[in-house]
Amino acid sequence: MKVTFGGTPVQLAGTEIHVGDTIADFSAVKNDLSPFKLSDIKGRKLIVAVPSLDTSVCDAEVRRFNTEATKLKDVTVITVSMDLPFAQARWCGAAGVENVITVSDYKDRDFAHTFGAYLPNVGLIARSIFLLDENNTVKYVQYVPEVTDHPNYEAALAAVRT
Image (cartoon, rainbow, N blue to C red; front, side, top):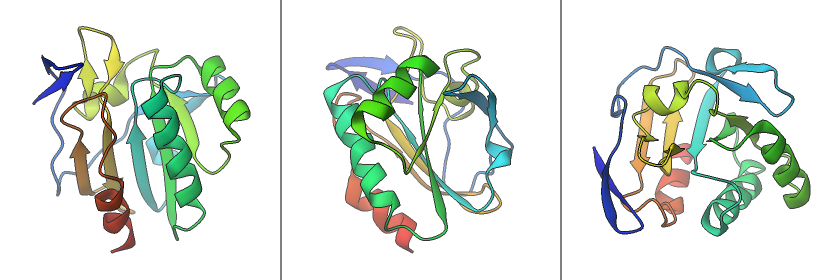
C-alpha cells in the first residue's frame, strides 16, 4: 500500500490489513519497559497508530482519543508509536493522558509489520486506525493517505459505536 509522507509517496512495509482479517497477536513494549501483547487485552480494541507523540497532529489525535475513550463502552484504546517508552511516559504525564494504553514498537517493529504500517525510509509507523472485535477480527481499517494529516475521527468512532 502507498501513502504519502510530507507529500512524498512511500510504500508501506508489512502485510496490509483488511476488514475481515484476523490478527493473531503482536508484541510491543509498555512505558515501564515490560512486554505488551495484544492477546493480553480482552474484548474490543481500537488501535491508534501514530508516527510520534511529539508531533502536533499525533498529540492532538491521541488527546482526542483519550477524551473519546471515556465515552466508549467495552473497548480498549491502544496507541502505538515508535517513540521510546520513556518518551511515551513523559508525554502521557504532561498531556494528562490516562484513558488509553500507549505502547512502543521501537524494539521489534512487530506491530508495524503485522499491520502493514511500517515506513521503512524513516523508521516510523504510518498514521492508521484499526478496530478489532473480541476475537481480533478486523472490523474497521483506516490508513491515512497523507501521514501528516489527521485521521477521519468520525468514521473511526462511528465504527466503534456500531
